[in-house]
Image (cartoon, rainbow, N blue to C red; front, side, top):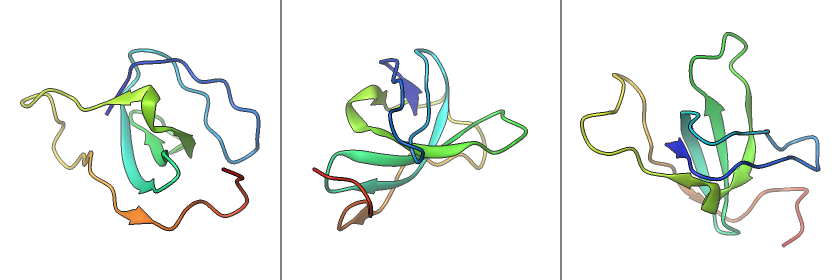
Length: 81
């Protein structure tokens, strides 16, 4: 996934992201938030971000082993909608 909109977190489980960064979506929730992992990070940074901040990478730009699909869940625990 590519970051299309910068996001500044307000809660501890959220991840700060900037336009142009590459992320792997680990899970997508019904409340339009996603659990993501920053690619290329040594610390394997993970957190949740709003889905609208992300866009699919065009075909042919996926790194081997990187997945941009997630599974739906009933929502994030600890987040209000």
